[in-house]
Structures are given as C-alpha cells and as structure tokens.
Length: 249
Image (cartoon, rainbow, N blue to C red; front, side, top):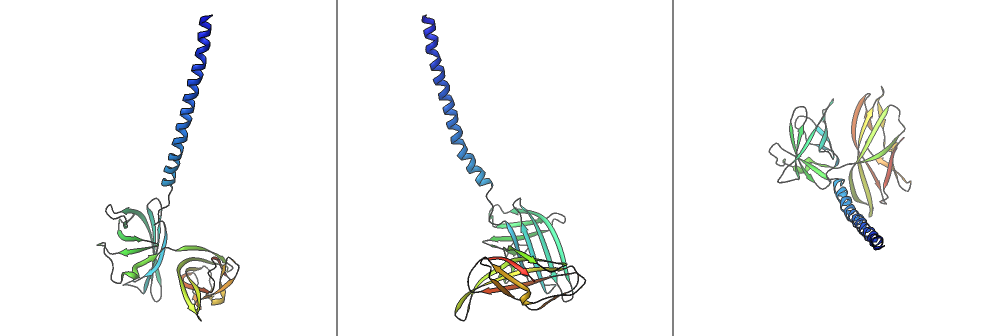
C-alpha cells in the first residue's frame, strides 16, 4: 500500500516537470520567433540604389548619348547606350556585375561580363554619377548625373507602335503667379510600321488620379518607319494631383 501511494505521488511530479519543460520550450520558441522575424526583415530590405537610371549625357564622338542603367538587387546590372548622330543612331547593350568599394560603399565598379570592361559610378540619393577611369569626376560633372526614373503606364491606341515612358524630372513653376507642377517624361517610341509616325501635343495626354486630362508639351515629332526615337515630353498642371497613366490617341 505504501508503495502504491509513493508511485501515485510520483506521477504528479513527473506531470509538473513535463509541463514546466513544455512551457519553457514554448517560451523559448516565442522568444526566438521575433528575432528570426527581424532577421528576415533585414534580409529582405530593398537597397536604396536598386532601380533604373536614365538620362542624356555628353558624347565626344556623337551629338549626344542616352544612358539607361538598371541596377539589380543580386548585384548585377544591364546597360544600354544609345549614340545619336545626325543621320543615324547606334545602340549597344551589355550586362555585368557590381563591386562595391570596401572603403567607400558609394563608389561602385561595373564589370562587363563579356569584355571585362570596367566603368565607375558614384551612388547618390535618387541619382548616380558617371566617373572617369581614375574614379574622378568629369569636368561639368552635373551633366554626368543620371536620375533614377519611375515607370508610368502608357495606354497606346496606335497600331504597330510601342511606347515606354519614364518620369525624368519634377519641377515647380509659376505661371501667371500660380504655382504649377511640371512633369517631364523620357519617351522611348518604337515605330514598327512602314509609315512615318507623327505625334503632336494633343496626341499625348496625362491622366491624373482625379481623371483630369493634361495635354503634353512636345515639338511635333516625326519618327521614321522601323525606327526608335527618344523624346522629352512635359506636362504642366496647376494642382499636384498624382499622375495615373499616359494616354496616346
């Protein structure tokens, strides 16, 4: 009988011990989860330099050059260079890897995959700057600063024409003592037809989130058959209502 009582008294001790271990294990998991979550948050954080940069820069052997640089989170890049001449344009595309300077993380080396050619850029807030082969600034360095662009949807009613638009610049201007917003977009217009394409001001409309329509400011543009053209297109309107899309009539 005494043995039975001793055994019965032993089971509650085992049960309590088991509960304490279970509670302790559960507590440890709860303590660990927030830490793991914070680690995941750090790992998935998007770097500030990620994105596409696009602008015209000076060119010694041509009239002007368009640089379009996409920096990817996996430390790779794609680069498109378009040189403009009086009667033609030449385009080159390349890709490679990014290498950040150990002493200065704002200094980045671009190494091309095929040729191993090296370019240098400096990272800034919302723009990059092209550097020479000695990692120094060019003369008139402001002309070599390339802003980060934002894509906008283009509803295009034209057949055999593809159009891409990127927000290039935002400005505040005064017209008749009224503050206006001026948005400038860089258009890439691909005329895939066998006819000359003509675009006028009232063919390109910016629609804001309140469904207000704003006509573009652009010189009448003629685009030859089966050619690509790059144009800066601006829209000015009095109220800073965010743009939603661009409509091509």
